[in-house]
Length: 276
Image (cartoon, rainbow, N blue to C red; front, side, top):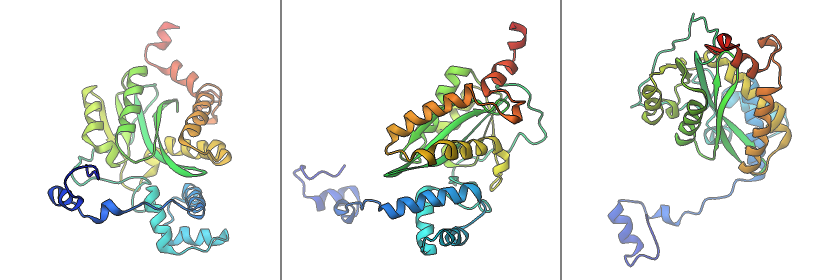
């Protein structure tokens, strides 16, 4: 919007656009290796103890030999989109103008694939930065239907994953998420409404309302992300492609009677038994 090649002076351009001049002279500082390591540790601590706030995470970091102040922990957690469970689910930033929908799954017996899908976003640490991962999961089978990576917490990578899942697997009866602004946005909810999908949202601070995808995050991080220390989003994408393929087709879950997500999904899909 502001360009140094324009015949108008920068001051005049800023006045016309009602922008502060300080913004055009600002050069963002690169994140230090120390902060990247702290963010990786914060993510690990938060994954294991999601109820800890800035003071608790600071104390855990000190237990690991990292001397860091509470204010710096707060700054890094804000950058990551991480907040303590007692306030709201992690990465959940509600929008005051977005509609919040009620939780529809309480007391509901869910036994078939495509009855309920769920989605969530998590922080992915890399060796030289970080990104975010969104996944769409079938509730009964735990099958990951689609996923996307992004370097920002925008809405587009969430809608792209949703559109892909719908194109590949049809539409569920209910779609459950937290109250994050990505999921409450018109761009996201309008897609669900277009396909006549009922919208369900967790209560604030109730990660158990979306427990299966929370367990997915722990698995993908401890079994892949933390071990690999990826250098770039391209590497993360290649690594997670392999991991999710194995997760869906080869990994047997005790909670699924030692079956894979693929086996449970296709065997419980309405009409599948009739076709067998």
